[in-house]
Length: 547
Image (cartoon, rainbow, N blue to C red; front, top):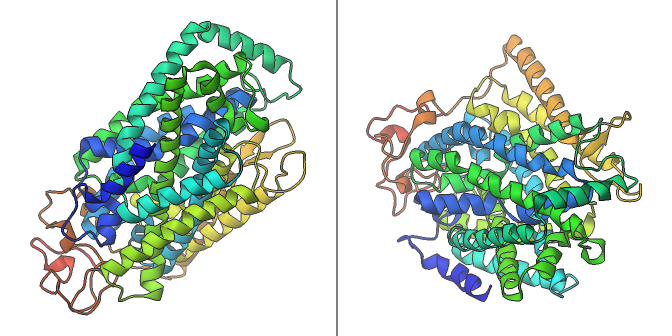
């Protein structure tokens, strides 16, 4: 762990640019990562401590329903291949670093961009909390109880991120994948040594048969299919809308890198499936969690069955797997705040170095805000924290995901639908009781009364879509025009070799200009970059539509 932290601090010097003090360099690594770095970064941020601790904890606790993460991950792969490639192209051409910037330009509404950014930040907090809960579980297993070890770890990773930006988690992701590959190999050998999967399933089936809970077991209960299906669909859609989901891909150097990495994602799905199965193995071996905390199941399994030296490697891997995505998520949330809230509404004339400085400090607030959330909310399983965040982020799907396909929606309808979806989703979440039937925000599945349940996020999204479509039809019929679309069809197929793209730093919004121009109307007085193109139309082969 000490070596990993030293590596994180030194990442600022890795491929260091001439001018590192910009959001382009700090927030998306200068968009220069190749196949391998992008591969490890995506794996490090998307397949995290949630994968290795929270999902096995769920299969340990309730059985088959915990396996929803595997089909959700599999469905995500082809969707990533299609949608993320389009998002990379339009972001590369216009210099976007966040989905909220895209929504603002696509529908001609800075207000919509601000709403998407606020929603993304709100949804990211629970997701970061999942990672910190996993880290806390590892620390508790090795004897470091209480909150201070967690806060110490958050402080260290915050300093690494503050200094090195996205380069720190990108470099550490390589170490994390090596450590986790070792842990998986050791786990598979361990299962084979203690009776194999057949024995694990037999013992787990006997355990679930003896529990009073009718919803657990190796198979879904008769009323569990709707809840399982809506969890899969809702999670698969939500993952695209999270601010951090796009950061790793935007750091790629070209479209081919994005597509290759999307095509290789099923390898991580295999690792996720193996980790989920370890929940059944832990159950069959009689592993008991520390103080009833199910998040400690996998760390306890490692403690009981791994050789001491191998357990140390596994603990280090799990710790890094928690810190990396927490760092990436906080960077993404900070980028969203800076580009869609701070710059348009607070400091329109902010210099690039100011943008980077604001993002650094906001990233710290996100991490410590997530740590505070752990103390405020106590769901039965830490997966519920991610699912609660999913309910919130799903409400941006019409703007950021469907917006990649069509600009038909009216900006006022999108904002209204977002508010309606959030109201329904948060209201339903508040009404779900906690452990013991008391409290609020006790989960993310709404009981229908007939033994079945439905994921709250899908219900809220359906309400959102209904409002958006109906209101768009009414506004169009009334002759109310929508906002001007600052993108063109060619933008969604742009590549690094496009003749309308010069060096990226010539196109990034926020560099000093002679007069306010470009995609979203941002600009500032001339400076040392005043010789650069004043708008995308000034570039060779120009003609992009701007507003």
